[in-house]
Length: 164
Ligand code: ADP
View 1 (cartoon, helix red, strand yellow):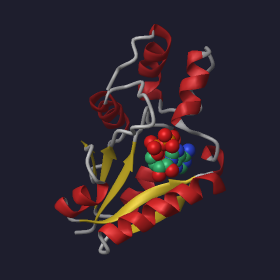
View 2 (tube, protein in one colour; view 1 turned 90 degrees about the horizontal axis):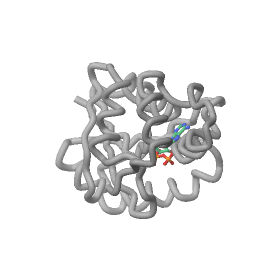
View 3 (tube, helix red, strand yellow; view 1 turned 30 degrees about the vertical axis):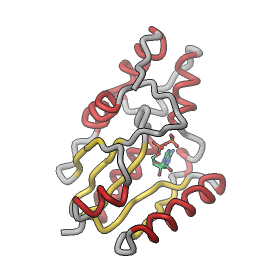
């Protein structure tokens, strides 16, 4: 069984992330969407909340969601994953993602990093952009799944941000 991991902060999950997750689910027997923390970003949602938001909109049978804050390759090794699947938006993503792929390869040579190109309409879509638009009262319905739009509106506009 071929297992892939789709890691990210998903704060919150967007249509861009979902496109990558669904495409990965067609290529692998099982996909683990891995919610990780990013020390450089102050999250709007806790890890548990971010995982719940993903579960609300991903119903594919071969996709599951997990939370992990350690070294990605250790998780991949422990769960028998053969690939890390990442989405690439623009050239600006490439430098950082390529560095990560090389580091992960040197830490665990049996893991492959696979890059899927973002769909054209998701090229400029990011979680930070969604949060910015939403907190300024803009319409985010074209950027996030309908199932979670209200959760994002509530959190962005009530100011009850988490401290995860
Ligand atoms: P962000 O960069 O928006 O904070 P994450 O850290 O949660 O996103 O990203 C997780 C993965 O999803 C990364 O591989 C990232 O490149 C990819 N990704 C993020 N936004 C998009 C998008 N709009 N289209 C395709 N892939 C994306």
